Length: 277
View 1 (cartoon, helix red, strand yellow):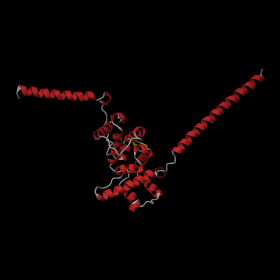
View 2 (view 1 turned 60 degrees about the vertical axis):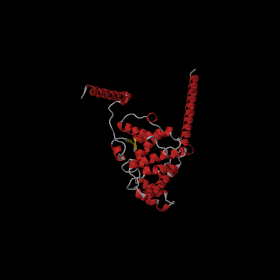
View 3 (view 1 turned 90 degrees about the vertical axis):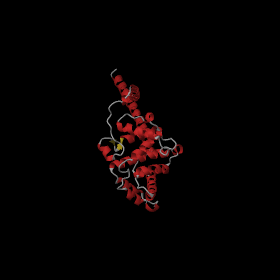
């Protein structure tokens, strides 16, 4: 190799090294730590629970996404229907699995966070509505029956493994909140069911799969429409208001009791003082 060619090679190597150094410096110091890689996508809910990556049956990553969307995304038009940037979604996925601290508002946006949630559900080895129970769900709704008894559907949901049941309940609770803002976000129960049906039920490809998916979407809509009954949720928003009012009443009564006690105590002290004077 001639001196000229060698100089060119050395120059190219120097340029590559310089670019690599720029990339390293560009990473914040708090993200240069040796974080432990932890696979979160494509892992069963039971395995995530065994690894301590869930709380009350809810995977930590799902909780983070839902909390972010609850605070910032409920009125976002087209929430879950409009997909996030593919590269941003993949970067978020890698950050979560690398153990790097993630701030969805800083590192992504509402659409990418929504897409990440769908991706997590879609990549579960066994769908949220498990493959073992899915045929029975479909049979319950077969032939376009609209008279499906809620009790039958509730009993079937209860047969899901605990981790699947808890996540389904948590997800549906969140989606009912999203549906309450449908005037702003244009995502009513049926639109949400159309989006989440394919992510909660895994169907085979082909024409038969398409027919089955349509039925699964209807099942998803039924679950969302009857969330309180199916999951036996008795603590509604009205109950919350009632509890708040009750708490205020208790505070007032306690305050009055303290005041009356103080008054009686002072009055008694005064009588006692007068009797000895």
